[in-house]
Image (cartoon, rainbow, N blue to C red; front, side, top):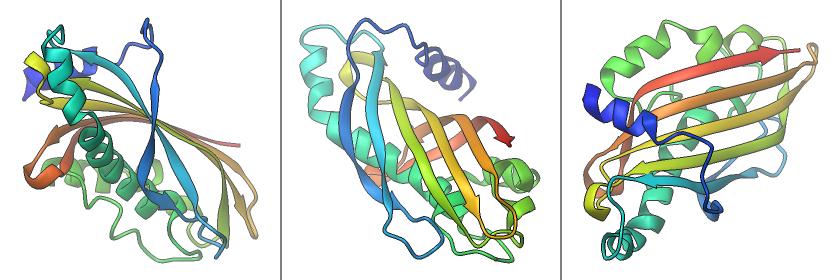
Length: 193
């Protein structure tokens, strides 16, 4: 698993010579204030792991499913932790549904970083300003074996406390059965202003 994390993490360099390809998200994010949801913007970043002809064609048939599965896992965290819930609230129970058990345990120990815990009773909603997920894929011989999702989320809070919040993260995922991807590691930075 450590080798996979290093290999997938190594895929996250932003110096890609190819242009990222946009894909529709599998779900949308709510604002928490009853407004119409804002869709995630998913793009394919780098693909690493000996993806040359004919392996490039082999990966191409997996591309849509990888973006959909990774997008679904990432969106479940963003929606459950920040922008898809109603405020004020008492907990963020569904925030880590796509995390593996060890990653979920770690994330629950850091609620102010991994959710809107510190603002949960001080705001009545959020307005999403930016929500972008770039997916780098580790695909040896064209078969997806891991991914790094580079997340950029920016939103403004409404209600008693008005803040601009930026969440930047690298989420490390591996594929599970039936197109589901699981988050097994993360590197998250958050800034409130």
